Image (cartoon, rainbow, N blue to C red):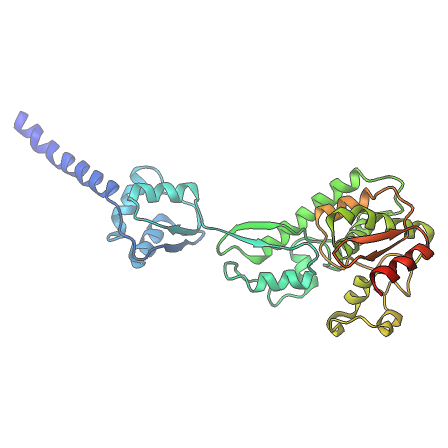
Length: 325
């Protein structure tokens, strides 16, 4: 009986030894670093076969057997992965189960236009490009936006994502983030503001974003525009004219450009522009809805990024002569 027991147990012990040897033996990498994709909907057998073809696994069936034996076959997460050094099959299963995918990032800069944002998406090699041939209107529809124009609707920030993520995901995340930030800022706004809707606040914040050179001036710049709106004065801000000119702007703004009427020419039309002119950041939103308490109606660049503010046209003209002429 003892001999029979030993004979019966011997294959089991050999199998366990083989199991342990395979599970704890580091897998040599085909390349360093080794990057690969686990596609959604792929079962553990198909995944192991792809890893064998990529040169990471010698035998796909052994990895499948290991995953099923440990109950891990249903916990593997799709995505892009990178291995910087050899790992054991057990460690590989743990990486797949935790979804430790490669993280990429895309930075959207305050003051960018939506066109610049789209260009950054289209040229990012780590994104899956599904919007390249879509119109702006089609993109807004795909992300569930109710607005008719995309400018200003996307929050400038650094967004992290797994390699291979669809660009539409970044667009939707940036849109939803802007909605959240805008609504939060609007809820705590200065109630004496002449701005009547969150979208009007977004428009003015985009103008403040483009006009601000020194961050310390931001609330004063916002106050100048708010004061002008209260008095029914023209906003007279160059960035809106430049935005309205589009590709026709060659880097020089001339007097004839300021006289050429368009919906974005705040030298010829009163009130806000029809849409934002850029992507405003959180600081511009906050400054717009919490402007400085001042009676200033004018400002001019000092040439060092900061601005000189004036309450009267006479004082403003003196400042222009001093800093611009």
